[in-house]
Length: 470
Image 1 (cartoon, one colour):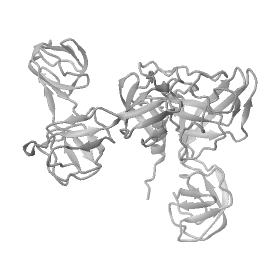
Image 2 (image 1 turned 30 degrees about the horizontal axis):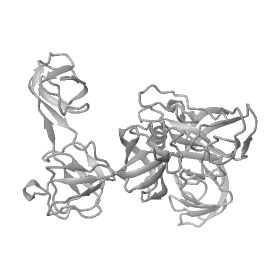
Image 3 (image 1 turned 60 degrees about the vertical axis):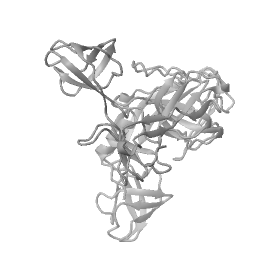
Image 4 (image 1 turned 180 degrees about the horizontal axis):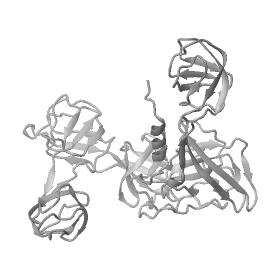
């Protein structure tokens, strides 16, 4: 049985999804769509669905800027990587969502069911959602709706008595987030608008987003980790911790800076220790051989500074794992399924969890301590010429197969951006060929009384957002 999400858990979940706390990377963008689409849980963006009102043709207009007055995004964040002005729609402010749980029933109907079973048949399933509490004679306290198939419901507890057209109320405990009304004002005809959706914000330009075969996928540069250790039958390997140990040349107590004789391989985010350096201090800046710290020195810094390299920072879930040495301890088709970045007591470095059990020991004495990691890299190159994708690590996008491709189409999070026209993903993309890049779809709704025809300068569409967990 699935876990019950408490009211507070639902509230926290919605706050996170909607970026109500501004602690996750991206707000959501409200977009309109002009495709004749009825949203379904399995929906993904495509050239035939969820395209935006860039023109009045009611056909996909990806690749060119709108001619309809469909608005460019106006930023409401100041962070360097949160420029979304290449996108179209309305960027929502995460902390303007009002999230609350309904304490009273919102729907009432009649139901029939047999004592000792989990099933009831209702007369009207309108406005009932999975997760709603059900209340009525024969239904135990704190029973909620597990599944809905038409007018047939599955409940979380067995009926305590037969039900025959018994009145039942639903809806208590439903958690909903609401957002103030947003208005789209058009400057010219934009076709028929069927509904709206929310996507995680990114700054992909119109020259790339939605353009068929606007991206190409190829093998990335293989990553090799030496000094690894693994025990046959385990589902993980340990990487080897690497320390950078320059000499400290100066460091005054109470300040946030030390100088070293060499800053080679020192990087922002690394932990550093040494005489006069507070526990769990991290590097926040580097200028030549001056290292800036996040904690004040507890005394005069001297001797050796030990910087801990994050040896797993360029690895991510989904990368394929292999060895070329003999014995080969990695089973075929092994991928990364998790990473512990912190070294556990008694181990040589971070753990990398694998999808398959090790088939032999991995260690220096065996001569097979090198482990290889592979992934694919995406280049934004519509028409065959590389262009800036404007994506940043943490952006969520949908990558669809192109005209010729072996990649698995799915929503991905941008992992790294080696150049302005290339990026990698988490989970790691695997495969080669063409790809089409879209904004994600998080929530979608079709207008109940739509579509609404946009025909004249000044025509408007007003949207009030309500998102409920089901």
